[in-house]
Image 1 (spheres, helix red, strand yellow):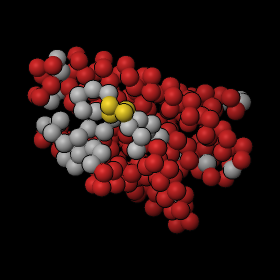
Image 2 (image 1 turned 45 degrees about the horizontal axis):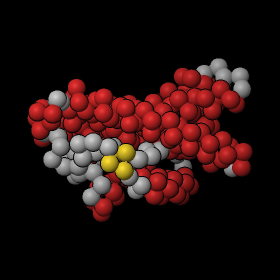
Image 3 (image 1 turned 90 degrees about the vertical axis):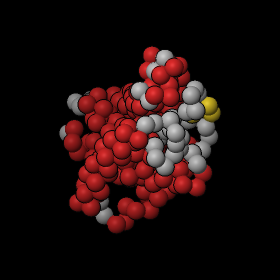
Length: 220
């Protein structure tokens, strides 16, 4: 899902930088208000895990790639605001040191994976509202994780589809079906992995699930 440089017009790059910057500033302010300094090591460990998982890429179409994203996993581990910043750090390291995603397209990649992934927490919140059993919560994790991948791929497809270099190939009529087809399948795998990891952590180490704790406070 990483978009390399040269695939988006300057206007789209600028717009996506501005949109992503707004979400990053919002997340940073909420973290300063609500998170203790002792929370930093968990953010670092979570970021390292997602960094390693995202390095396993395989090509999809038009220079984009498919991989596990981990946005919902971070949202349940850290909460939505810390998840956005954590994923942004991962994407920054990948772009600067590994050329995985471009510098000019960095704003778009942050929106597609960090912002949408972090905000999937609210999908989980809606589904889990009034939950009477733990299974209801796990279903919410599964759906939120799947949707974060599908929505991120849709945003990616629209961004590259409206760029002039893809006009001759059919534009969004080509990029949207192609990206959605593959990422609908990838999303099922990511949802299964995310739900399994979160359920095991809930059983073995529930204190690290800050996002789940936030969810329970807001739902109850």
